Image (cartoon, rainbow, N blue to C red; front, top):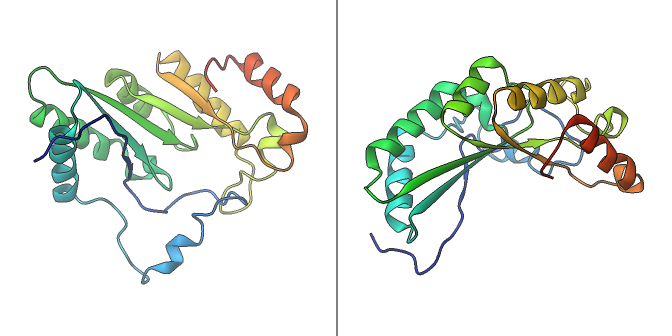
Amino acid sequence: MEVAAREFQIMVKTIGAICNLDCHYCYYLEKEHLYPKGTNFRLNDETLERYIVQHIQATPKEIVSFSWHGGEPTLLGVDFFRRAVELQKKHLPPGKKIINGIQTNGTTIDEPWCEFLAQESFYVGLSLDGPRELHDHYRVSKGQKPTHKQVVQAFHMLRRAKVHVDLLCVVHDVNVRFPTQVYRYFKEIGGQYL
């Protein structure tokens, strides 16, 4: 395996475009329909291990970063990521360190997730588009139900578990008109990284 000349980032779409939300601005929503019905979008164990090995081998620096994305990667469950971390540790040579980051909409985050993410020192990107009325304008469930309450609960659970959380805010045609309100809201709830 050839080592890259410089550091690089790869975002792993562990579950393809599969998501439990129906965010009105999301360009991934229709991607699921490009594949035959019944397609399994889950990254299988063989491909997962091959990816981990090759990514570690190709990374020139001592820090190897893994960025887990989707769709919604947490739909795979904690055990998928336990396996990923197990494989990372199995193939990690001396002198290198793994850093994991996951981008989530937060709606499936519960105590077992928080425990795992804290134990394995994951960095979490949490999608939150501002206060309730701005967030829920577009970020809704498949049944068109609001998601703000769930996401804020996930944020506070993650913080209590001492997980590093960055807030990712999609700037859209509604919240763009209220930048001060959005900023103050993130400060009010304890957001440190945006």
